[in-house]
Length: 548
Image (cartoon, rainbow, N blue to C red; front, side, top):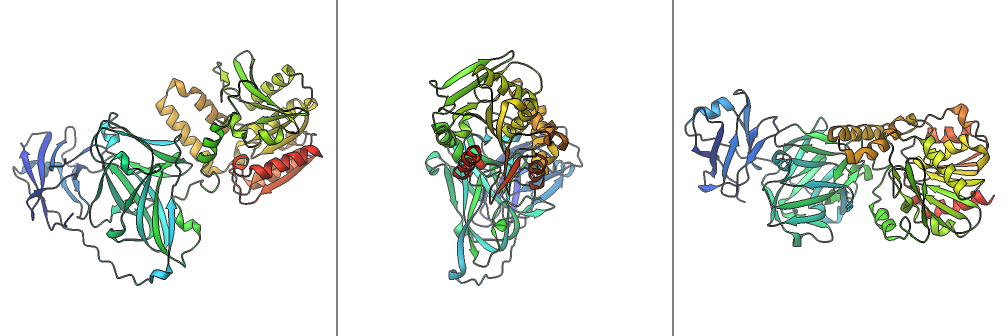
């Protein structure tokens, strides 16, 4: 697209009292329509985008005349005019000055440049950023962005977008932007020219659309944001993969940018960076409150677990009917009983790497905790870890097991601690992996994410998400196991956590210190996802501990 020196609007229909104003965006030099220009009210969530012929209609109904109408197109300085003044002239000519960016020549020898990839790489199909024009138009015309931080001057080669599914009757138009950072949010678009793409399904390779921007000569340093915006309505829907516990940014048209703390869109970039660039912290999304070092992308493990027979094995599975729940479980192997208890919102499938190994020496009982997996709960009471422990006791009794071993991950570990306190005579040994004794033992960033998640659930107020709400609330409100109570546990306990766990390391150490017969192991370079990412080491530690 050639750079234009000036730009003006020729209004096709106009009157002083009109609330819906229509017009055409035309380039002065070439006397050609300019497509896809943003026209809207500053700090407001609603506006219009001119079509491929430069035509637009913007609804100013209900807006204060002192509000500013903002007009933007990449490569030009933003223009703002009051709504009142915008209405006064029968024929408006709004000249936009070309954005001039002087970049000093970069003298970096090619041999000193190395290829790196920064950003969110997940290709999950379970956590998604959905683009659906059938929903509210202001939401569809919204923009999402991801933050990056480059310590050394770097050139962007490709911008990658991981797309989980694509359904459209025609090419989907989207615009890419590059923003500076101000006070932790996107600020000014610094691209010299517009970058728009008409995306079709065949352009998506292995779940990724790669946009080559090498010829645009985009050099970055410090904090910056890559943004994407869909510009034209279409029949269908696009789902972009997203990563939990990463921070993305959203805004509706010219509204304020908002942090999206639950998940971030899968935008990543290929760059050429100087070989002397600093450590990998400079190569990730740099939102300051992210948990990517503590909870990594485990979508590949989730996909592998779903391919396994575990969690849906009719030959090994059965239900325990209780007063207000049907508790689903599966049994594998023979020998001393070992219960495996999954984490919050998990299921039996999470132990797909443990079951085949541990069942060679133990009778492994894997359980879907009530309200999770294939287990159902018909009560309207809050979930409690004490109730979960009671369920395990009832299942053990049904199976005729008088003394059991328990290995619990995360919430499952908390259930194990509650079981040890309530049924000490029924517990042989306990392994807890990434468990906490009270809510303050969890990293504050995760607490913040969960509070935001609960806020979203409150706003949605969907009956079908009642269980999800209870699962978030139990993590925020429980457990409440005091140091005095931990000291009452007499069974041998192996306490495990990662050095990058969401459970604070001093809290994990406290648990091991308070339990009289406890052993502690902190896995190096490990997150909260030990049963997934450190399966071999965990299996060996469980077998060794139970074999003592």
